[in-house]
Image (cartoon, rainbow, N blue to C red; front, top):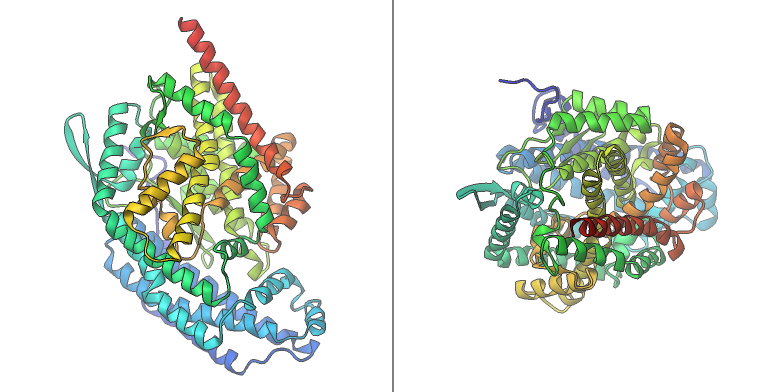
Length: 602
C-alpha cells in the first residue's frame, strides 16, 4: 500500500486524552460548573458601587470557563456525527450536552438582565475599572441585548423547549441529510453516493455525469420534500414565536445583532450588488453559449471550462496551499503545517459522511478540526483553504482576553474567504497558458456569482419565507415557488434548470443557532477583497496588520472595525462598489478572452 505524506483522516483521540469520548467525567464537570453558576446568580445582585466590579468579573470568568468546556464537547459531537451520522454514542452525548447548554445559556441571559439594573452613572464608572475595562464592548452589547430578554422564568422555559424542540429539529435535519444516499448512473453503472459525493460531481468534466448527478439529487429531494418542509416550518415557527415574545417584529433584527451590523450596512451592500449584476449575467450567458446552450443550465455552472484539466492529488493540493500561504506570512503557513501534520483535517472521499465542509474549534485544546470530502477538483482545494482560514482565526485570537474572543459570522467568513483568495490568485499567477488562465478565471468568477447571485437568492428566499410563515405553514410546493422566484430575481433570469429544492440541501436554513446565515458570506467576500488588496501592496508585512484586525473582530461592531483598520464607512454603497468593480474586471476579462478565442476558431 502506498504511503501518503498527508493523511486524509483526522485524529480526534488527542482532543480528550483522558479517555476517548467525554461521556462521563468531563460532562459531569461541565454540568457541575453550570449548576454552581446558577447558584451564584441566585444570590448575585447588580453592583451597587464601583468596588463591586470584581464580583461581576468573577461571574464573567465562570461564564468564559464554562463556554470553553461546552464548546469543546459540542465540537467533538459535530465531528463524530460528521464522520459517522449513525454514531449512537455521539447521538446520546448530544442529547445530554444540549440540556446542559440550554441551562448555561439561560444563566448567561440572567447575567445580562442583571446588567440592566445598574444605573447609567455607575455603569460608566465600573466599565473603567481594571476588572472590567477590557470587556467594555461586550458588556455594553450584553446590556443592549438584555432589553429584549423575557422574564427569567420565560427564558428558562424557552431554553428547555429548545432542547427537544427547536434545536432538535435542526439536529434531525443533519441526521436525515447525512443518511441519504443518491443513486447516480456513471458509465452505465449505478453508484450509491452520499449527498456530498453527488454534489462534488457538479464539477465533473463530463456533462452527462453532471446532468445525471443533478437529476438524481433533484429526484431524491422531490421524494422527501414534504418531510424537509415540515422540518423547516417547525424551525421557522419556533423562531418567529420567540422573536415575537421578545418584541422582534423584523426577522432581520436578530441576525443583524448577532453579526454586530447595522441594517444600513446590509442594505448598502445589497443595493451595490444589485446595481452591478449585468457583467455576471453576461458571463453566465457567454459560458452557456460556449456549451452550445442559450442559457446557463444549473448543472453546468460548476463545470470546468476546459475538459482536459487534470484532477489534483490531495498531496499536491496541500503542498500548493502551504507554498502560497508562506508567501503571505509565517503565522498562517506554520499553523497550516501543524494542522496537516497533526491530523486536524478529515478529507477522505467516501460514502456515509456529512454533506458539507466545516471547521470546528476546540478552545481547551487550542486546536481545530477541518472537515470536507476531497474530490480532486480545484473547488475542493479552495474549500480546504477556506476552512483552514476559519481555523486560523482561532489561534489568531490567542492573545485576546476571554470573552473578547467571540467574533460574528461576518468576520469568520472574511478570514476564510481571504485564505481562499490567496490560493486562487496564486493559481492564476502560475497559469502557463491562456487555456489554464481561463479555467482559473472561470473558477474565480463562479465565486463572484455565488456571492452576488446565489447568496442573494438565499437571502431573498429566506426573507419571503419568514414573511409567509407568519401566516401559517408554507407547503413544499410553495417553498419551491419561492425558491424559483428568488433565483429568477437574484440571477436576473440567467439560470436555467435551477435547483428549486436547494432550500432542502442548503444546511444554513436549518442552523438553529445562526439565523439568516447567508449575507455574512457576501459581506466576507467583499470585505476580504479590500483586505487582500492591501496584502498584495504590503507583502509579508501585512500579516501583522491582518492579525490585529482579526483580534479586534470580537470586541468591536462591524462598522467600527472596518473604520479602524481600513478607514472607510461601510454604510456607504461606495465601499461595496470598490470590491464589486474588481470582480467586474474579471468578468470583462473573461469575455475578452473567450470572444477572442471564438474569432480565432473562425
